[in-house]
Image 1 (cartoon, rainbow, N blue to C red):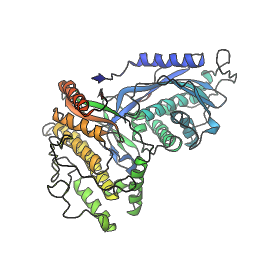
Image 2: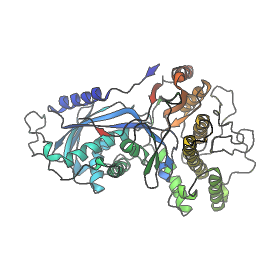
Image 3: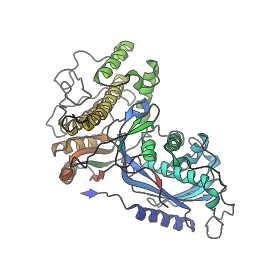
Image 4: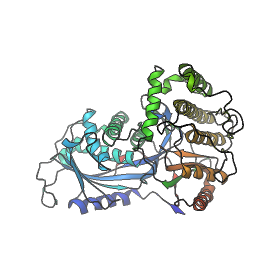
Length: 498
C-alpha cells in the first residue's frame, strides 16, 4: 500500500535548485511554489457560476527561475528525462505550444494579455510533488508557481541579473531585467485574483483545457487551516472553518492511478451543454437561476423552468431507474427518493453484484442529455450551500450536534450525481468510493474533473489506514493498478520559497 507524503519545503526547493544548476550551469535567482488542491464539494459548477469549497494540499509544485532578456522561455522538469524545452514568447499563441511547456509559457503570455505588465524570458526548473494526472490540479499548481516567478521577476528585475553567458550552455549576454517600480501583484489578495485570471486564460487558450477557474484561485488564494468558499460569479472568497482535526477526522485522498485527462473533448462538451442552456434560459450563468440562497426547492424550480422551455427533455413521471420509484435526488443528502442516500452514509451499491444496476442518462456525442447536466449543476450548488450553512450553524452557541454525518451524506450524494447525471466517474472511482464506504467512511466521492483521477473519503483519524487498506484490497481484487493515498489538510497558498 503506497502513501505519498508531502516532502519538506526546503528539501523540494533544493531539488528544484539542483535541477536548475544541472540544466543551465548557474544559480537560480528565486524559487517559488504553489499547492495542488482537492475540492471538498462543488464539482463541475465553477464554470457555471457556482460556489466551490476547495482546500490547498500540502503537496506543492516548485519552480526555480532566473531571467533572460531575449524573450526565450526554457523549462526543464525533474519528473521527466526529456531535457530542456524552449519557446520564444513571441511564438506563444493558441495551438502553438505542445505538452506541459504550454502551462509554463502560456502564463507570461496571459499576464501580458491581462494587462499585468510585459515580461522577459526566463530559465525555469520544475519539481512537482503534486501527482500528475490525478485530478489534484498539478497543472494549476505549475501555472501559479510560474505566475509568482514572472511577477517577481518583473517587479524586482533589476536585482535579478540575467545570464552573463559565461557558464550558460546557451549563452545569453543580454542585460539584466529592468525594474518595473511596482509591488508584485502577489502582495495582495486582489492582485492574486488577477494572477489567477491570467493562469485561467493560459490554461484555456494556450494549453487548450477549458477549465473554470477554481483550481488557480485556490492555489493562489488559499488560507492555511481553512476550506475556501469561492463564488465563481465574481471569484470573491471567504474561509469556511471545517476543523477536521478537532473532530478527530481526516480527509483521505485516493489517487486511483486511472489517468485523468480534460483535453479529449469530454469536459468541453459538458461545459458547452451548460453554457448553451444558460443562454437558452436568458441567464448569465446557471447559478443565476437559483436566487440568493440555493436549496433543493430552488433546484427543482429551475429544472421546471427548463422543462417548460424544452418539454421533450422533461423526466417522465413513470421513470423508474432502479425499480424503486422516480429518481428524485435530494441535494441535501438527507434521503432522495429511491436512491439509497440517507444522509448518514452512501449509496452502497457495489460493483460486485450486491445492488441494483445503475442507469445513466443516454449520451449524445459523448455527453449526457442537457437536463441531466442541469440537474447535477443545480443540485450540486444546493449541496454546497447546505454545507456552508452546516458549518455556520455549527459555530452558533445553540448549534445542534456536529455536522459530520450530514457532510458525509452530502459527499455521497455529490458522487451519485457526478456518476449518474454528469457521467464523469469511472470504474476505479466508483470502486474507491464504494470500498471506502464499506470500510466505515462517513462519506466519499470523486473529486476533480473526473474521467479518472482521485476520490476523497471523510474518515475517522484512526480509520485512515484501515480504510486505505480496504480500498487497496478492493482494487487488487478487480485487477486495477494499486492506488496511492494522501492525507489532505488545508495548506498555504502559492509563495516564494527563496
